[in-house]
Length: 89
Image (cartoon, rainbow, N blue to C red; front, side, top):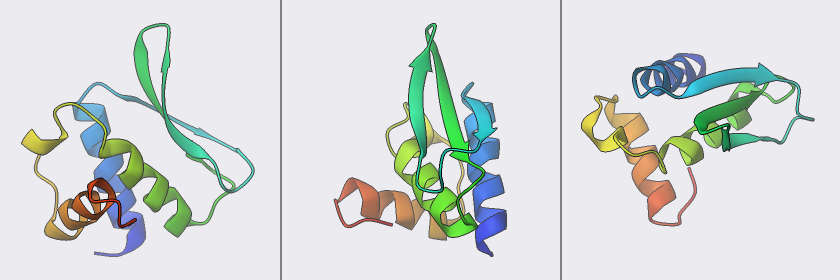
């Protein structure tokens, strides 16, 4: 599965979990989770390359309640586990 497909998979799972996804130019290094008016929002940096967007998304979803109950392809599950173990993506 290429990085673009992995990113799309993560964004799909976010949608299932009720996380609002916003694509915005954030300078190429940004992105991540925040709460706005009680709603969880994942900002995806449209100025970043796909690898950076994927890494930031993996780091963000590793924190989400309910992510462990969602199906993710093995390579994404492993990336989340690495983030949780403090080893990066």
